[in-house]
Image 1: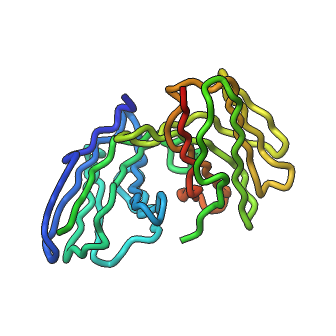
Image 2: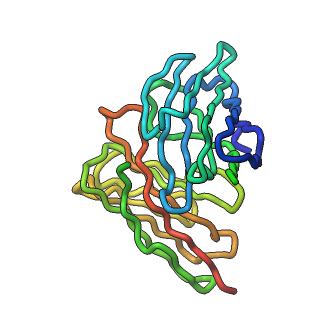
Amino acid sequence: DSGVTQTPKHLITATGQRVTLRCSPRSGDLSVYWYQQSLDQGLQFLIHYYNGEERAKGNILERFSAQQFPDLHSELNLSSLELGDSALYFCASSPRERGSGELFFGEGSRLTVL
Amino acid sequence: GQQLNQSPQSMFIQEGEDVSMNCTSSSIFNTWLWYKQDPGEGPVLLIALYKAGELTSNGRLTAQFGITRKDSFLNISASIPSDVGIYFCAGRYTGTASKLTFGTGTRLQVTL
């Protein structure tokens, strides 16, 4: 158990819909990262938050947005969903802003868009 | 997005055999990490390397940070069934701070 909690574990929805994925980092970790894992793309970095502020963006679509709240949990919002958005979405946390790359991953949220 | 090239993509090995896999990049990194992902789980950190030429062990696992800083290697000795999973390398360059670049993964399957 990494200490990172993600909900929901599984989500099935239709194209055009909007979903919210939630992540609670390890106790004391201030950094939260979101990654997307699909079969043909591997693990792709989406976005990084540190202590409530956005720190870096990766390959995140404009239809996607995220935020980190004062209690340090984070939400990833995916809207106008397309079939290609079906993937595993991982949240990871680390204690520092500019860490060494040692991330603690949650178990992921599997999104299926039909 | 940028990805690191891992090889082999997948491998079947006999229990007890040694395993080698590697990861190469066109860019240099200051940190190399190796993660393992079990089915239905998130990646778990196995080994972190911080210096070119560094050789680090974690039980039956040994990883090396390539001298050119563009590659890394992971060896598993005397493989056992619980070694099954996907192994990912990841590289980080100091200037990028946040972003880890992950490899394409090596799927390891062990036959008894």
